[in-house]
Image 1 (tube, one colour):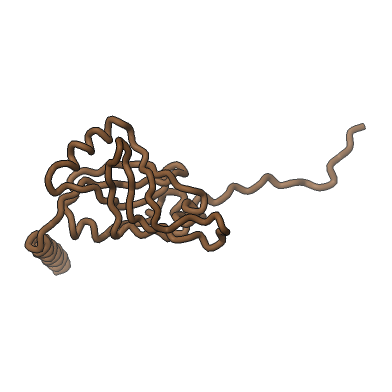
Image 2: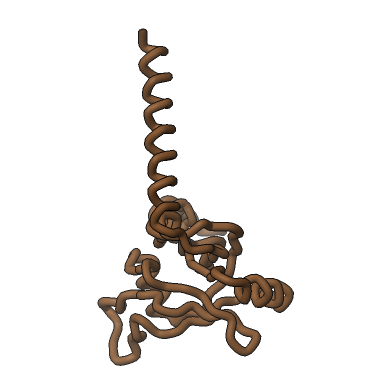
Length: 175
């Protein structure tokens, strides 16, 4: 005779996928807001980045600074310099160096295109944001040209004019 179960077990409840919006890819881990102020962003590229375990945990925690960082092509490889990823607070002696040079992962064909474009006068590679996609850390690189002071003023004037126009339209809709 078969024995009856004395207690019922519940199926494991599904984990909430929105638990960590950064890791789920719903929110960026880091954004370089000053890049669009200082540069004309011409083209954008999505690249992977080679990180250690403690670096990934710090990125999940949002301890990333892209402000002064830039990309270079050296020996047929793409590198990210001056990107600050803060130390992982629960790390031990194997914690990473915050400002180390990190390798960016792109196809050889894209690297060849970038070599030609970055050798043009005034063009550089600037990281605009860092985010998670399918559990992997990605960096959005922009091919950028530096703005002069008068370019920045012109952009600011255009932005305020657009804002005033939107406010005027909203006021006319209210009345």
